[in-house]
Amino acid sequence: MNKKIRSTLGLLGLLLLILIAGGIYIFVFQQGSISEKEEKLEELNANVYDPEELRIRYENLLKRSAVLDSILSARKFNIPQNLSSIKFYNFVNGILSGFSEDTQVNVEFIDQKRDKEFFVFDYKLNGSGYFNDVYKLIYAIEQSKELKKITRLTLGNLIRTDTEGLPLFLVSFEMIAQVYYSADNRFAPAEFSENNLSTGPIYDAFYPLIRNEIPPNIDELLDVQGARLLAIIPEGAFIADTKGNTFLVWEGEQVYLGYLTMIDYNNSTVNFILNKGGIIEKVTLDLDRVATTK
Image (cartoon, rainbow, N blue to C red; front, side):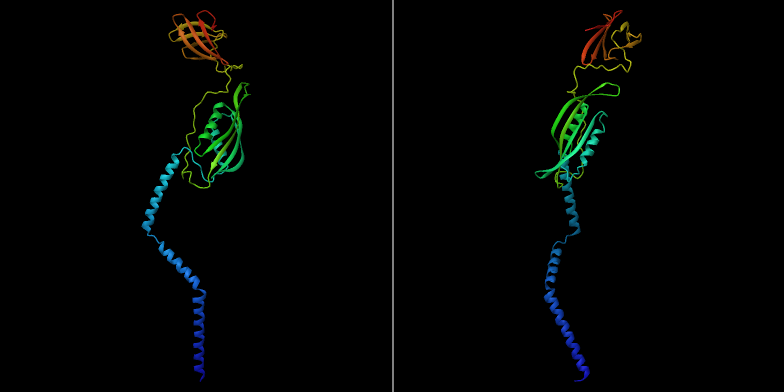
């Protein structure tokens, strides 16, 4: 056997060895991986959707989402998802923006806890202010779109004086407020819209009915006490106060501490209603006579 034949046989043997080794690697070592890839390919082919079908499904889901959002928006209260504890501070600051500068509110974060499937932030609020301001704060917390509750409330009366020495009849308060939130978005719409939190003034239950302090006559109105009725004319009545100042007043006009209620042309008298620190007085002026009190 010559050298050429031996070389050819050697190459054929080497090729056969490579083929055997490759077959063993493919069919033994890679068979599991190939089978897995084939199963994955079959699964992908089974889930291939037509683009038009996907578009239709998307539009249907979008409509359903809008309906669910509409239902959630129509609810009086919602529970937001993953609420930040800072948001309540911003909420309170927004409510206080329209309050008197004499109203002061402090907010303190207390705790975070779980209430069944929801989470709760606890806050402590205390301070003082006018009764209507405190009422508006309580109303805003209780009626806010994102669910909040006041679990404890203490009110008391408080009297302070302003820069001019006049008394301010305020209300001191302390309350515990709870703010609810959820771990998912099932309880709130995508677009947040706050409830109407405005409220009109109500009767101040803490304002004293009788007060020792009487406000000064800073507007220089007619002081009826000691005044004299000089004349009655169709346009009103001429009245002079104790300082000699003359005023022309008519029915319904404001005077110091009250109003002119009636001009009696038949009896030549003028009647007033005065509020002296919660004590109501009726004052009548007659021509050429000093005021009389009833």
